[in-house]
Length: 402
Figure 1: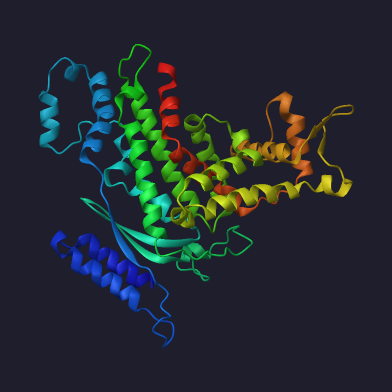
Figure 2: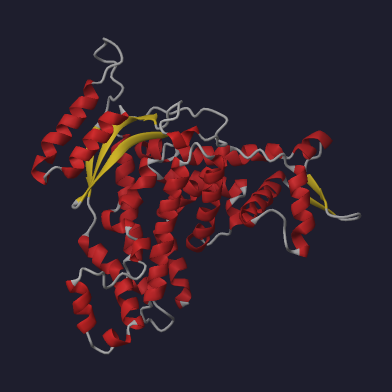
């Protein structure tokens, strides 16, 4: 099946645009003809479909202004009106306005911004994206299919890694789930890029446009999307998923207005999920919310890792911070603090702050270190929340003109 999908994707990527309708129809018909038995109704792909996502060229030009103005600010010759060196660079096909362009090039083909949607069912996939110059063709399988194989598909996968300990059940999705998820996702992206493409978002207290502020906002958002995708597809590697999730949460602080400790609290995550459950259309939720639900469930399960509390039969986690010092924490707060310890440990275990050294040691002693694999999906949960609230992103990126 993977060979079929790869072959068709390559053809659809390379064929002239005039030939795409015929090839796309053939791809869909081929999927619909797959059978696992003689029963004509037993096909694994009951609700296939193809959708077009188009990015506005006006948006591409608008966000490019940040790199243009930064080049002008840093190039005294160009700022003074001398363009001779620019003409020479153009003649040699040397990029002129390339300030950090490689860090937000995902907007050019929009693949970086559709990828988390396609990976939302991790470790299952529900569709494939074919990128063309005019936009993206998204082919839906109409169902979740496993994105992994039991055996190593390549030699790198033969190297042992700590991965998930439990299988993931893939929920059935309805005939309109793919269309609903794509529609919601693209509508929210449209609103989000309405914020990122609005120069007034990136002004100072006097109302003057600041291209450095604009570029930093673009880089932050793309970083969140790209790392969320990497985290979602890192199903086989628990350490990679966890580390990526922490970097996502760090980046999200500036566009959500909440710190890491808050995002690691079960009550906050539960409330965010409840808002998403209420806001998302039912068909879109079939694809978008299973991973978010798993993140909240894993955060709840992580509280069970405080084995001393269980064995001592105490309602709270009692941290011994010294001979006469005890800090009593709810399991929720202790879990959030323990996750922060793990996040800080990306620089190495052990606190270098006298005020937190005893607490860090106590938390490490109280928890068994069994971190549910799906805790890493918290980054995905909060990405959905960012997409749900683009006006909050605008306010936080504006930063009161700072």
